[in-house]
Image (cartoon, rainbow, N blue to C red; front, side):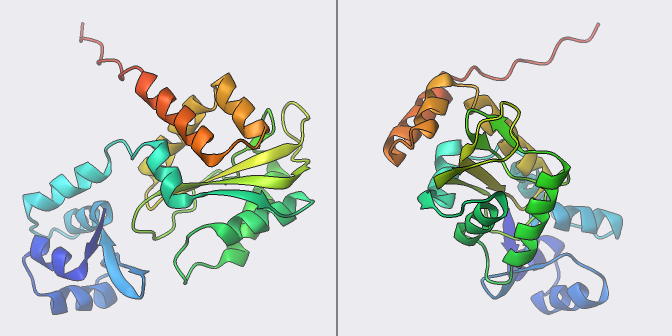
Length: 233
């Protein structure tokens, strides 16, 4: 969760001016979002603990809330969008086209992001089979977005990604998140959904956005609850 500097000041029981000064002089983590500085609740809590700062219990609750399971894939895709007819005839070209359509803050270096994704493909394909790839790097690139999202790009031309099954890729998923725990949880959600044969068929046939989202809703409704921890012996 992102906090304004005024909210951060309230949790730290100091003035907003003090918070702004600490950003410069004490390394208080803050990120520029829509031309305004914000703090991530988890990062702010960690910074306060490391620096021995007294902090409101409310901040810990906010940080814990940020670690909870992310929104549904349907909601994440509604934010990130399902884009059809994404251009490019080679892997670097479609990666660049995918990066271009991501709803990112203006200060993000899209050229750098595209080059990092391309370098990752050179180390090992992110194609998972059935014409689907999830471009990502081994260590998640965290971007200072107000909330996580997933973007789906359906390609105009199938492209060779050296996928595990040898099939060209026609559907790319991009995951963008402000924290590593959230990023990993979203990848787990996506991995669960993409085991579904019908969803893969919909992606392979470039089905309508409504059809894809409807199938995801059905999968999420049918998903079993997480198992309870095993009792201690």
